Amino acid sequence: MLRILRLAIAVPLLLLLVLFLLSNRGDVAVKFWPTDYIWEVPLSLVILGAMGVAFLLGGLIVWVSALRQCRRARRAEHAARLLEAQVQELKSRIPSPAMAPPVA
Image (cartoon, rainbow, N blue to C red):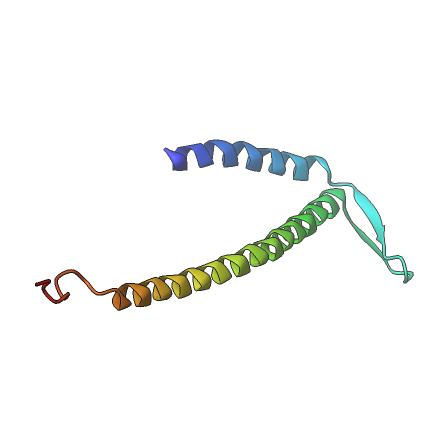
């Protein structure tokens, strides 16, 4: 079911992308500011390139923010393991009723 939903979303988006590429074939001059270099490319490639760069930057931002959460999770797991070890140690110090000497 999830695969059908993905296809139902992806196919129209890809169709729109192809239509966008075909309808924006005019050349634009892309200038790189500190230099005098000018690059003439189709408008659709400029926009798709900008979208690709934005997508990669967004992924990088999400990855960096996830690193902080992963670090916190690792610290919490380490603290939980230490606390579990302390609980086991304390439980081993308490004499169990089966090992207690009989009361006379």
